[in-house]
Image (cartoon, rainbow, N blue to C red; front, top):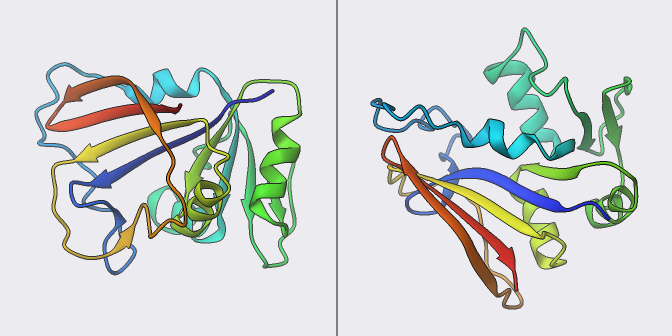
Length: 176
C-alpha cells in the first residue's frame, strides 16, 4: 500500500500562504552554504502528486507558467471545474479522501499531498496522512492561510527527523 505524505512549508506562525494567497515569502536566510535539498530526497519515493485547484492554478500561472514542474509524476488535481485531463495531469471531481483511498491501493511509490489548505484539512480530519514533512520558514506572517485549522480530534505523531539549513527547519513526523 502506498504511503501518503504531506510535504509543505509553513511560516513560523503556521501559515502556508499570506493573506493574498502568495508564497513569495518562502525563502530561507539566503546563505545556504550546506546546499541541502530535502525536496530531491523526498521525491525519490514519490510517483503521484495530489493537489487542489488553487495550488494547481498558482503553479501554472505564477510559480512555473512555462513548464509543468511535476512532469516526473502523475498528478491529480481535485476540482469541481471541468478541465480536460492529460496523460500526466488528471482533473478529478471527487471526494479527496475517497481519491486517496483508491490511489493508495495502486502499485508504485508514495503519494505526495502538495496542497492546498482545504485539501489538506479534509485529509487531516480523515487521519489518512502517514507522514508529515513540514519545513518551517523563518518568517512570521501574522495572517494568511493556515496549514492546520481547528481539528475535531487529536492526531498523535512521532518525530522521525529534524534538519536545519539556511535558517529553515525540516520536521518529519509519522503517525503513532
